[in-house]
Length: 190
Image (cartoon, rainbow, N blue to C red; front, side, top):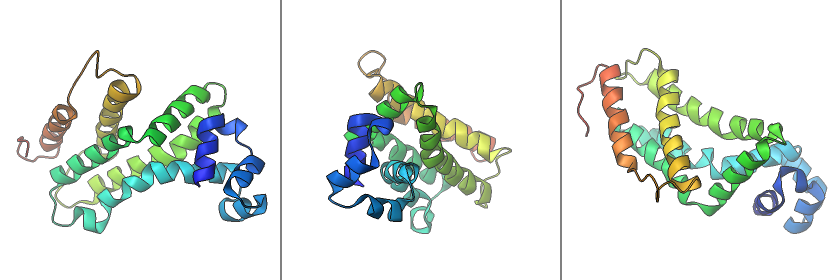
C-alpha cells in the first residue's frame, strides 16, 4: 500500500504502473492483483486508507455510545478537518484535483472511495438515531460535510488561512446550531 501511495503521489494515477508498484513493494505483480483485483481496486484501497478509514471510528458503536448527536457531529467535523494536516492526504487531494480534468476516472474513483462512503456513514447516523428528526438527513449530511470540506480546501489546500482566515469551530458551532433548529432540538451550542 505504501509503495502504491508513493507511486500514485509521485507519478499520478496513469503514470504509476502495476509493474512499477510491484517493483517498489518488492513483490511480483500477481501478488498485487490477488489482493486488490486491478489498478482501480488498488487505488481505491490506497485512497480509503487515508480518508474514509480514518473517519469510520466516529460512527462505530464505541464512537457514538453515550454521546449526544452534537458531540458526534463535532467529532466528525474535527476528524474530517484533521486530514488536512496529513501531507499524504493533501498531496493526494491535490493530485486528484489536478489530474481530474485529463483523467475523469480519478475523480470518479476518489468520489466512490471517499466522498460517497463518508456521506453514507453520516446520513445513516442522522437517519437512524432515535433523537434526530431531520426532514432530509442526506441533504443535511451533504451540507454539513460540504461546509467542513470547503473550509479545509479554502484554508489549507488553497492557502487561504493567510488571506481569509476563519476558525473551524465557528463553522462547526453554526452548523450545530442549524442542526438543532432543523431537528427540533434546543438551539444552543454545547
